[in-house]
Amino acid sequence: MSDERTLIGPAPLAYDRRSAEWRDLPGRNDPLTRELSKVVGGPIGRHALVGRSRFVTPMRVLLALAVVFLAFGWFTKAACIQQGPVGENGAVGLDWSGSRQYVALCYSDTVPLYGAERLNEGALPYKKSWTEEGPDGRLQTRYMEYPVISGLYQYGSMLVAKAWDSVRILPDGLPVAIYFNVVALGLAVAWLVTVWASALLAGRRIWDAGLIACSPLVIVHAFTNFDALATAFAATGMLAWARKRPVLAGILLGIGGATKLYPLLLLGPLLILCLRTGKMRMWLPAFGSAVAAWLAVNLPIFIAFPQGWREFFRLNTDRHADPDSVYNVITSFTGWPGFDGVLASSDKPVILNLVSLLLFAAVCVGIAWVALTAPRRPRVAQLCFLLVAGFLLTNKVWSPQYSLWLVPLAVLALPNRRILLAWMTIDALVWVPRMFYYLGEQNKGLPEQWFTGTVIVRDIAVLALCGLIVRQIYKPETDVVRYGFVDDPSGGVLDQAADTPPAWLPRALRPKVRIDVEADARL
Image (cartoon, rainbow, N blue to C red):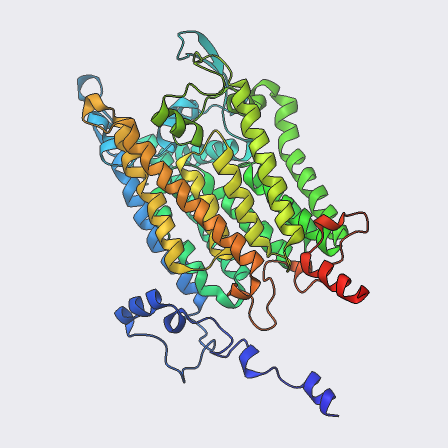
């Protein structure tokens, strides 16, 4: 009878979801948050009733904080949608005089893309082509350079902006300014979805999502490009997996992959973890639905406008190392001409493409080895962060807004508020020397090495996060996410799963602890 009462009775207080003991309370256990909480009255009392408020819930507070920081982000870009008498005979236009976009640190890709992608003409992406002079002086035929969802999002935003502009009773403005605000509104909603999904993925540590809502990178990069769309699909895809809905997870990750590439990368860690736990039957539907969703989005555009559809892939194959890639940083400080030597602007960096691919493949192999041999199965978010960080570090392109990809994954993988805040601040501050480097020394800007030096600091910070996560994987007792009966809030079918790797997997790729146990049994 006593065993039966234990099973059917209420959970112990420590695991009651309404109890202060079960929830993570940063005001008590985190020194940084404890000090910050003094602004609003100090840490929560020991006898406070937690989890019983019907209105002021953690999720609503997090979303409100996210709205505040998104507003900060909009104000940082607002200087770049100012108008002035810059046209012929004093015609009003977009005022970027005096390199305002760099001096005011307000640059956003969305503003110049409105004209560069011919959206101001109402052109349908991937169908519309135009000719422009390349860096080598040759004429090039160009199309929309973004993946399908990102391109169609720009087109839809343009249609909304033009519809707004056509209604005379609505506030008027420059078409590009209206377009930017429409884009920003959609990106803000996408980031709110990212915060919402990440907060649910955090489980009992819901307040960790506060670092996503209040990240300095949100202020700088939420509206720099369209990456918040991808983070929303990635976060909701992970949430669907956590809720044991692999088909929906695959659909969301597949659509995310048609927005930016990285959501598709998250299928890799799921594959390795499912292999370790013998859950491949759950991974296959996710993979199949991701492929189907990606094809469903891309095939119509490919069939209708094959040349326009290929532009994204052509551009990424042909482009040289970006200023903030590790390859350009080495060139900046050593004068190294690169793997391909000195290239003309029209030459393809063939060897660089191969090297970056091989380096990323090596990263994938290393992460798979860690995932399979760690004494305890790593959490999904830990491996996802390692993979995306490895992709960015080895890739020839690390556009500044790509750092947003890491924010939700880092918070879920390593919820150390001070460490994460330090990294986010470093990464956000790289924007300042970047803008003044683009300004040019002839305009009193900064030399290149002032910028590439800060990129080194950022890369070291990301590598340090990777090292801390690997250490946490091999010492799971230091993982604050795992508490009591909590194993992996993002794991879904992997949560609490036992290690049952397939028989064909070599001993060297099996969990170390499992091997030791088998050896002891033989003795």
